[in-house]
Image (tube, rainbow, N blue to C red; front, side, top):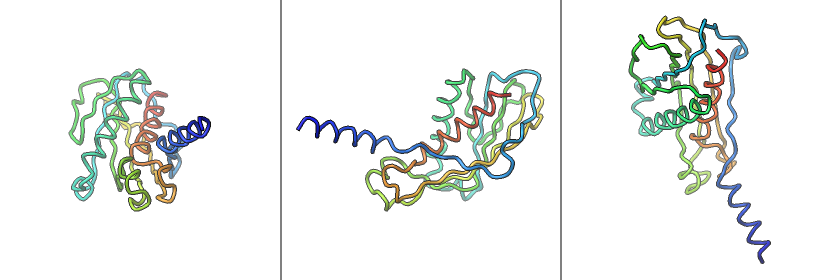
Length: 178
Protein backbone atom coordinates (compact mmCIF):
# COMPACT_ATOMS: atom_id res chain seq x y z
CA UNK A 1 0.00 0.00 0.00
CA UNK A 2 2.80 2.45 0.90
CA UNK A 3 4.64 1.56 -2.29
CA UNK A 4 1.51 2.27 -4.35
CA UNK A 5 1.12 5.65 -2.67
CA UNK A 6 4.75 6.49 -3.38
CA UNK A 7 4.37 5.57 -7.05
CA UNK A 8 1.18 7.59 -7.27
CA UNK A 9 2.83 10.64 -5.70
CA UNK A 10 5.82 10.37 -8.06
CA UNK A 11 3.48 10.13 -11.05
CA UNK A 12 1.56 13.16 -9.81
CA UNK A 13 4.74 15.22 -9.42
CA UNK A 14 5.85 14.28 -12.94
CA UNK A 15 2.43 15.13 -14.37
CA UNK A 16 2.32 18.52 -12.68
CA UNK A 17 5.87 19.42 -13.67
CA UNK A 18 5.30 19.24 -17.41
CA UNK A 19 7.86 18.84 -20.13
CA UNK A 20 10.46 21.39 -21.04
CA UNK A 21 9.72 23.60 -23.99
CA UNK A 22 11.71 23.24 -27.16
CA UNK A 23 12.61 26.36 -29.09
CA UNK A 24 12.70 26.32 -32.88
CA UNK A 25 14.94 28.65 -34.82
CA UNK A 26 14.66 29.70 -38.42
CA UNK A 27 17.36 31.25 -40.53
CA UNK A 28 21.02 31.26 -39.56
CA UNK A 29 20.78 31.23 -35.77
CA UNK A 30 24.42 30.28 -35.42
CA UNK A 31 25.59 33.56 -36.92
CA UNK A 32 27.51 35.56 -34.37
CA UNK A 33 26.07 38.82 -33.16
CA UNK A 34 28.37 41.78 -33.40
CA UNK A 35 30.40 42.33 -30.26
CA UNK A 36 31.12 45.48 -28.33
CA UNK A 37 34.20 46.56 -26.37
CA UNK A 38 32.53 45.94 -23.01
CA UNK A 39 30.42 43.06 -21.81
CA UNK A 40 26.90 44.07 -20.85
CA UNK A 41 25.96 44.22 -17.18
CA UNK A 42 22.38 45.37 -17.76
CA UNK A 43 19.65 44.09 -20.03
CA UNK A 44 16.66 46.25 -21.00
CA UNK A 45 13.70 44.53 -22.65
CA UNK A 46 10.73 45.80 -24.61
CA UNK A 47 7.87 43.60 -25.81
CA UNK A 48 5.58 44.75 -28.60
CA UNK A 49 3.23 43.33 -31.15
CA UNK A 50 0.79 44.36 -33.80
CA UNK A 51 -2.35 46.16 -32.62
CA UNK A 52 -4.21 42.85 -33.00
CA UNK A 53 -1.68 41.04 -30.81
CA UNK A 54 -1.74 43.75 -28.13
CA UNK A 55 -5.56 43.77 -28.15
CA UNK A 56 -5.67 40.08 -27.25
CA UNK A 57 -7.31 39.20 -23.94
CA UNK A 58 -4.13 37.32 -22.99
CA UNK A 59 -1.63 40.08 -23.90
CA UNK A 60 -1.13 41.34 -20.34
CA UNK A 61 -0.62 37.82 -18.96
CA UNK A 62 1.78 37.04 -21.82
CA UNK A 63 3.86 40.17 -21.08
CA UNK A 64 3.88 39.31 -17.37
CA UNK A 65 5.34 35.90 -18.28
CA UNK A 66 8.13 37.69 -20.16
CA UNK A 67 8.88 39.95 -17.22
CA UNK A 68 8.90 37.06 -14.73
CA UNK A 69 11.01 34.76 -16.90
CA UNK A 70 13.55 37.41 -17.88
CA UNK A 71 13.90 38.57 -14.27
CA UNK A 72 14.82 35.02 -13.25
CA UNK A 73 17.08 34.38 -16.26
CA UNK A 74 19.03 37.64 -15.87
CA UNK A 75 19.40 37.14 -12.12
CA UNK A 76 20.94 33.72 -12.76
CA UNK A 77 23.38 35.33 -15.22
CA UNK A 78 24.14 38.16 -12.75
CA UNK A 79 22.78 40.84 -15.09
CA UNK A 80 20.69 43.82 -14.02
CA UNK A 81 17.29 43.78 -15.70
CA UNK A 82 14.77 46.45 -16.64
CA UNK A 83 11.45 45.55 -18.22
CA UNK A 84 10.31 48.54 -20.24
CA UNK A 85 7.10 47.00 -21.59
CA UNK A 86 6.47 48.42 -25.05
CA UNK A 87 7.93 51.86 -24.25
CA UNK A 88 11.17 53.35 -25.49
CA UNK A 89 13.86 53.26 -22.86
CA UNK A 90 16.42 55.82 -21.77
CA UNK A 91 19.11 55.47 -24.42
CA UNK A 92 21.72 57.16 -22.21
CA UNK A 93 22.17 54.11 -19.96
CA UNK A 94 24.85 51.56 -20.83
CA UNK A 95 22.98 48.31 -21.45
CA UNK A 96 21.97 45.71 -23.99
CA UNK A 97 18.52 46.46 -25.41
CA UNK A 98 16.48 43.40 -26.32
CA UNK A 99 13.41 44.24 -28.39
CA UNK A 100 10.92 41.39 -28.66
CA UNK A 101 8.40 41.72 -31.47
CA UNK A 102 5.56 39.24 -31.11
CA UNK A 103 4.39 38.04 -34.52
CA UNK A 104 1.87 35.54 -33.14
CA UNK A 105 1.07 33.75 -29.90
CA UNK A 106 -1.54 31.63 -28.18
CA UNK A 107 -1.47 31.81 -24.41
CA UNK A 108 -2.28 28.63 -22.49
CA UNK A 109 -1.78 28.73 -18.73
CA UNK A 110 -0.89 25.66 -16.73
CA UNK A 111 -4.12 25.99 -14.75
CA UNK A 112 -6.17 25.99 -17.95
CA UNK A 113 -4.31 22.96 -19.29
CA UNK A 114 -4.75 21.01 -16.05
CA UNK A 115 -8.42 21.95 -15.81
CA UNK A 116 -9.51 21.52 -19.41
CA UNK A 117 -6.83 19.23 -20.87
CA UNK A 118 -6.82 18.86 -24.66
CA UNK A 119 -9.79 21.21 -24.97
CA UNK A 120 -7.46 24.18 -24.36
CA UNK A 121 -5.63 23.67 -27.64
CA UNK A 122 -1.98 24.38 -28.40
CA UNK A 123 0.25 27.01 -26.84
CA UNK A 124 2.66 28.67 -29.27
CA UNK A 125 4.59 31.81 -29.99
CA UNK A 126 6.56 33.31 -32.85
CA UNK A 127 8.85 36.23 -31.95
CA UNK A 128 11.62 38.25 -33.56
CA UNK A 129 14.29 39.61 -31.22
CA UNK A 130 16.60 42.53 -32.02
CA UNK A 131 19.76 43.08 -29.96
CA UNK A 132 21.08 46.65 -29.68
CA UNK A 133 23.96 48.18 -27.74
CA UNK A 134 23.08 51.17 -25.59
CA UNK A 135 23.85 54.05 -25.52
CA UNK A 136 25.49 53.79 -28.98
CA UNK A 137 22.25 52.40 -30.54
CA UNK A 138 24.44 50.04 -32.58
CA UNK A 139 22.33 47.12 -33.82
CA UNK A 140 24.15 43.90 -32.97
CA UNK A 141 21.88 41.42 -34.71
CA UNK A 142 18.55 39.62 -34.69
CA UNK A 143 17.16 36.21 -33.89
CA UNK A 144 13.82 34.51 -34.57
CA UNK A 145 12.36 32.16 -31.96
CA UNK A 146 9.29 29.94 -32.20
CA UNK A 147 7.78 27.45 -29.79
CA UNK A 148 4.75 25.20 -29.86
CA UNK A 149 3.07 22.49 -27.87
CA UNK A 150 0.61 19.80 -28.72
CA UNK A 151 -2.64 19.56 -26.82
CA UNK A 152 -2.38 15.79 -27.22
CA UNK A 153 0.56 15.79 -24.81
CA UNK A 154 -2.03 16.68 -22.16
CA UNK A 155 -0.64 18.03 -18.90
CA UNK A 156 2.86 17.08 -20.08
CA UNK A 157 2.81 19.75 -22.81
CA UNK A 158 4.91 22.86 -22.30
CA UNK A 159 2.44 25.68 -21.73
CA UNK A 160 3.18 29.35 -22.36
CA UNK A 161 5.11 29.90 -19.08
CA UNK A 162 7.58 27.10 -19.92
CA UNK A 163 7.90 28.32 -23.51
CA UNK A 164 8.67 31.89 -22.43
CA UNK A 165 11.18 30.57 -19.87
CA UNK A 166 12.98 28.61 -22.59
CA UNK A 167 13.19 31.57 -24.97
CA UNK A 168 14.24 33.90 -22.12
CA UNK A 169 17.09 31.56 -21.22
CA UNK A 170 18.30 31.56 -24.83
CA UNK A 171 18.10 35.35 -25.05
CA UNK A 172 20.14 35.75 -21.85
CA UNK A 173 22.71 33.18 -23.06
CA UNK A 174 23.05 35.19 -26.27
CA UNK A 175 23.51 38.47 -24.41
CA UNK A 176 25.85 37.03 -21.78
CA UNK A 177 28.23 35.81 -24.51
CA UNK A 178 28.73 39.36 -25.74
